[in-house]
Image (cartoon, rainbow, N blue to C red; front, side, top):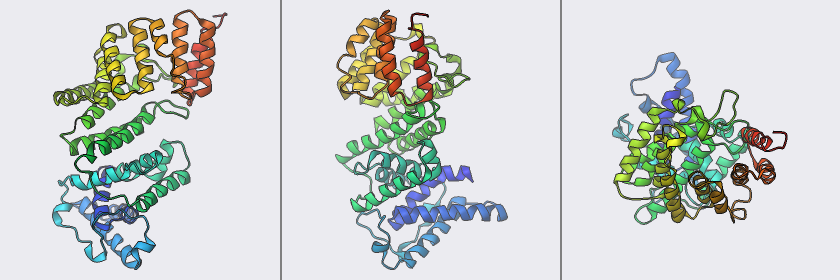
Length: 412
C-alpha cells in the first residue's frame, strides 16, 4: 500500500482536483479512498487495477460531499479556480484517464504549479507541495521541518485558503509566464532538498528522506517538461550532491567536511546518473544557475581525491554564477574556492562586505574563522568561531565549530 500511495497519490489527486475544482474535497476524498483500500484489499486482495479502484472510490466520496453541500461556494472556500466549475453531475472520468499507463502530465503539472504559486508564503508552498504532490502525510511533513502536526496542518490550511482568496487559477502557466513560474517551482524543490541535505535546525545535519523526496519531485517535473533545461540541471545537481550522503556524517553523527570524506562511500550510481543528466542539460546550450551549480558539483564528483580537484575551473564557474545571480551566498562559496586555489588571504578579501548581506548566516563567520586559522591569526579566528556558534542551528554544526575553535586555543 505504501508503494501504491507514493507512486499514485499525486497523479490521482491531480486528476481528481481537476474534476472537482477543490483541493480540499479532492484531498479528503482520496485519503478516504486509501483508508478504504487498506481494509478492503487486506480482506479481498489487491484489485487488478488499483489506481482505477482508488479513483472510483474517491470520485464517489467527492460526489457525496458535493451533494451534501448544496451551497458549494459558501460551504467549500478551499477551491481552485479557472473557467470551469464542476458539480456532482460532472464527476465522470473517461476510462483512458484511469489507465495505469497514462501519465496525465497536464494534471500533475497543474497541481505542482498551483502548490508553488508565488502568491503563497514560501513555507506554505513547501508544505503544500510535500503534502499534495509528494503525498507525505501532514505528520511526515511536520517531522521533516521539526514542528508539531497541528502547526503544519494550520500551515497547509492557510495555503489552501489563500488559493481560494487570491483566485489562483488551476492551470499550467503559458507563454512568457512559464519561465518565471517554473523558476519559482524549482526554487521550492531546491529549498526542500537543501533542508534535507543540510538541515537548518535540529540534532542531525542530514534528513535523507526529505532530500530523496525533492529528487523524486524534480525527476517528475523534468520528465513532464522535457524541453526545459533547468529542471534537468537541478535534478543533476541534487543527485551529485546527494551522492555524498553516507560520507558527510561519521558514525557518531559528526559532520565530515568534503576534503576529509571517504570518497569510496560516495554513491557512484547517483554520480553516473547526475553526470548523464548534466550532459543532456549542457547539450541544449542554455546556461542557467542550476546548470552552473551542477557543473561545479560535477567537478567535485570527478575528482578522485581533494588534491586532484580543479579549483581553478570551480573559481571560474562561481564567478560566472555570481555574475548571473548576484547572490551573497554564491560570493561566499566563491571565496572558499578562491582560498583553495589562491590561498586563504585571497579568499578572506572576498568576504569583505558580506556581513550586511548575510547577517544571520552561520557559514559566513565559520568560513572567515577557517581562513583566519589557516593564516595563523588564531585570536581573530576564535572570535569568528564564537560568532558562528551563536548562529549555528544544528547540534552537528555546533560540535564541528567547537572542535575547530578549540584547535585555535593556546594550550593546543
